[in-house]
Length: 390
Image 1 (cartoon, rainbow, N blue to C red):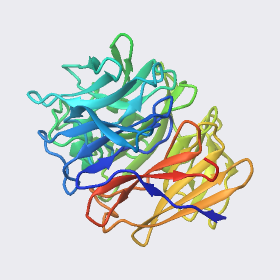
Image 2 (spheres, one colour):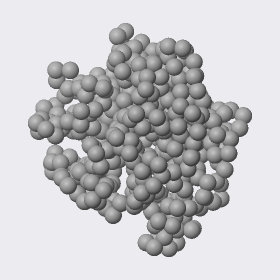
Image 3 (cartoon, helix red, strand yellow):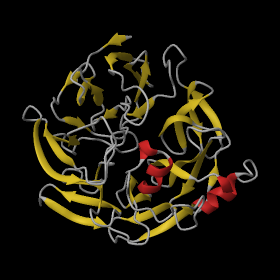
Image 4 (cartoon, rainbow, N blue to C red):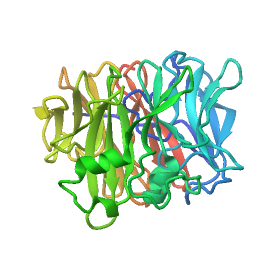
């Protein structure tokens, strides 16, 4: 195994970060690779209030990562950012992000165009305001989820103080996962919390007293189905953490018989990669069977870490925490070549709502990763990890 080292590309006194894990299409780079889209904030030592703004920036990779501010958002948090996604239908010029209305507190998704220098569309829904939870690989739809509910039930994943029409309801029938049509702006409810409660009722008869929320809405690479976790009582006894898949048209809801732990990633077809029995495993959601194991505990000390597959599906990056530091394993599934990086001090941001997770994100060429990290001055910054020869 060969060690490689990261290069810092942003610097204080402000904080710079991308947000979510770079899997299933969350590539920070534009199509040509010239721009990296990210957030810039004045603080990362508390969760944002409704009036706190994060700047949306572009880093020019052809000009020493010079920063250009293009917009701003009130729909963000320190952990997941604002769910930045380049539009698969125009990945050189357009990207999605979430925002919230300063007057109503309602969350919505934005489509921004660099060439036009403006928001070309806002996806606002007055009755059920949702934000982007993941764009399909074909760019036709995004999964809409309620970030206000998420903030109430697991603060680290949502936007504190956003308007929530489901407050006081354990399993509402008008919230869950929505399918939003990018072209028309129309939305429909794919699956409701009420349906999810019924799906787990036999195993968890107390479900009516457990307010449900959803995390990790992940589209398969074909766009045929969505994976997500239905959760409740996080941080308390009796936690629910059930993994589901559903077809894009809202049919074929399946609770997976084997729980896929960690931060799963879609592989080809109906296969996913995640943590099963403390191993990095490949799991088929159709047959509901483990079909392969990747390496062993020596290769992947923590299969529950943040994982991301390169666009060609060859390289698997696994980021994990150990002794207050970030570490990375970058493994080629075809050749067996493996690189390691890490020993990067988190300066105390290991756990809790303000933690800094490893969150590796591939570029489109599959030879460079964008990494988050804490620095000695207490700011959160962005780093590049290049594979040899990149």
